[in-house]
Image (spheres, rainbow, N blue to C red):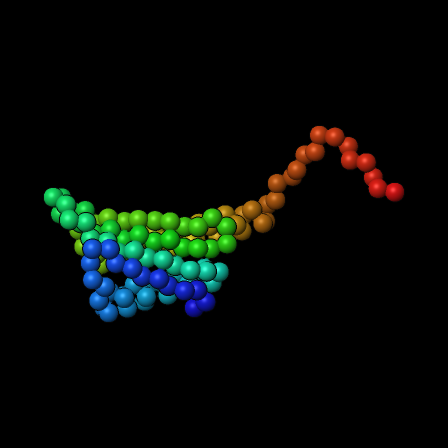
Length: 119
């Protein structure tokens, strides 16, 4: 694992179980893409009247190119983390596929004027 994992909790205490759970799940992200520079995770509890949207898991992956930023809301924190990791893996695969497609099928550039040759 080359990158760094940052985990922070907002309105909740981060237990060792939560930290190890997120770290184990995040290590799978590094298996899919070894060019991840940093992974930031925010676990948040929002006291609302709606119990189905109490826990929010947010992630920001710093990779070469545009960063991947996602957020999942549910009634269980572990469920939010699982759904977030699944979405992150899909986004990493998509970014890799698009990068590969761009590399294998470059677009031609049209220049309107003739370029003078250097003597």
